[in-house]
Every structure is written in structure tokens, then in C-alpha cells.
Length: 388
Image 1 (spheres, rainbow, N blue to C red):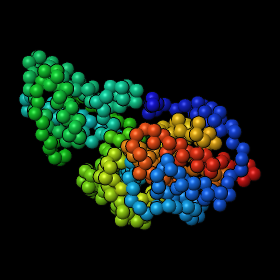
Image 2: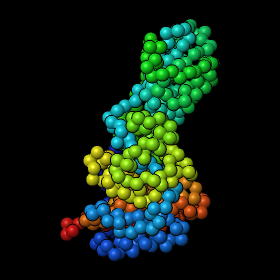
Image 3: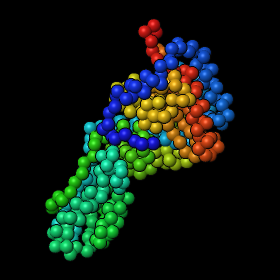
Image 4: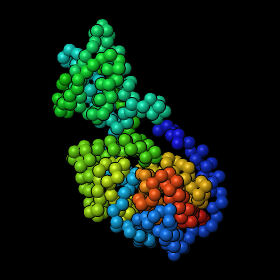
């Protein structure tokens, strides 16, 4: 799927898509019992292989339907809802990340001073089309200045750094080596790095955290989710590792009075097959977030069925009635398909979570599972009309 640029806004196109695919919507919203029966059909769907389900009425918080909602299941990228919540809880969405390259105080020494920028990339296409911070730009700029400063005789560097991920430093060094410059590297404490450099020779600044979060949720970017979750853990007072992310999620959920006893966290992206959540946990969290102004960006950044992000092509053929009326986070692992979010049904809005982690492996089974979810949401979805 081709991704739109981070800053690209196409409201007219989205309106046309929604209008063309939703023109057949005229039926009134389903009754309460009909909504319950529709979701019960998901539990019976062989394509979903005994999923964990919960359906909650946003208006009063009542559980409309549930099946095995307290059993721990693999969330896949639904885990990113926890990462996004922690970002909104602990980070300022206006914050930007800056990475600087400086000449060191000592000869043939380079200082990399960063803020753990999650937007950094080694991929040229991402840098070009999504305006990502391209690590090669910093490396090329560095080489140009260093070779000029050493009259082209530079052969080896000592690199000291703080605020860059180790994988980015490794890539930076490997790129320099391909250009004929060997190096060693060592991390230093944050309170020391500023005193080790003298002249800035290159820098790059990311978009705001809010913009990065929007991209992360829309396109389910695993690396961004992981790194943003680590930044949130750091802001919450925990270590920037998997345990720190886990501590952050548990602490955050306690603040929301959501039981996290069954939550198992191995990352911030949902890629780990060891992650476990319950449908009830995700459903209760989504309910509490929906009417909290601080967390409004999460709803606004979620993919919209048939229109944007990882839901851009969903519902168009499986359930056209639901186009534009489902805001949800997708999740996919081999043998797992999940979906969690909100569906409009007339004057009602429902929170739903479906975790199907026992389906057969392979794309065919995953497509069947997605289609089953879409069709049920298509039965429930209905726009608010003037008579409602």
C-alpha cells in the first residue's frame, strides 16, 4: 500500500470516497438486540476461530456483548493503542527531536548529540516521500566537513554519542566505513556530551510528536511505535527498554482504573508473539479515552474504514455501509487478526474489540477473518440522521 506524505491533506478526495461508497446507506440504526445478535455472529464465525470479543455502549458504558473478554490474547498491532495512550499521557505533542553532529574537542573526534529521535530513518524513500530525518544526510554532511578540515587525509574517527539509538549509531558508522572512514564509538552520559563538542557541522529536527503519532497510528509503523513508547517510558521515569515500556503501561492503566493483571508486554508495537492483552482491557481503555479531551488526538488519528491508513481499502467491498463510520486500529500477525475501535450507529457509538489469535496461518485465512469483522460492523454502522 502506498503511503501518503505525513503532511498531505486531501479532504476533498476523502469526501468523494466516502460519498461514493456510502451512497447506499439509508437504513435506520439497528435496535439494541439486533446489535447484540450481530456481534454474536462474530463469535460463531469459523473464519475467526473462537475470538475474544467485547462490545460496549459509549453512552452508558454498558457491555452489550462479550465472549472470552478476560482471556489473554495476542493483540498484534492493537498493542499500539497502549503505546499511543502512553505518549499522550506523558509527552508534549508539540515536542520535536533534534539531532546534532559536532566536531569534538579532541582531534579526529566526532560528537553525536540527540534526543532519541524516532523519526530518524536509513531508508531514502521514507526520507523523500514522508520527510523523514535521513541519517545519510547527517553522515554525508559530516564527511564533507571532516575531509575538508583534514585536507582529505581523514582515515579514522572516534565517535562519542548520547541520545541516539544504538542501531542508528551502527548504521552511521557503517556508512562512514563504506566511504573509507573507520570509526569507534562509545556512549556517554547526557550531562557530559554537551561539553565534548565545539563546532556544530550538521543537524536535523523531526516533526512534532503529535504528527509522528498520527503517522504511526495511520500506517501501524512498528519502529515508530516502539521508539515513541520508549520515549514515553523515559518521560514516565522508567528505563527505555521493554521492561520500562511494560512498567509504563501498567502504571498508566492503573491511573485509568483499568485492571492490567493479565497484561504481558514485550514491546510497544505488538510484533512480539509473547504480548498478551484482554479484549476487556482494551475496551475499557477506549471507553475512558473517548470523552477525555487530553486523549482526543487518538480518536482523530485512528484509520477510518474505507478512507485512510491501514483501513483505506477495508469495507469498500465487504461492507460499504461502514465506510467512514469505523475508526479503529488494525492488528496482524501470522495466525492473528485483530481490530479495536469505534463504530457509529445512528445516535449511538459503540466501542468494540475483536482479538482472533487462533486462526490458521497465511494470508488467505487473515483475509477471511478481516472480511468477517467488516461484514458485522457493516450491519451495525449507520450515520446519524436528522430524525434521530
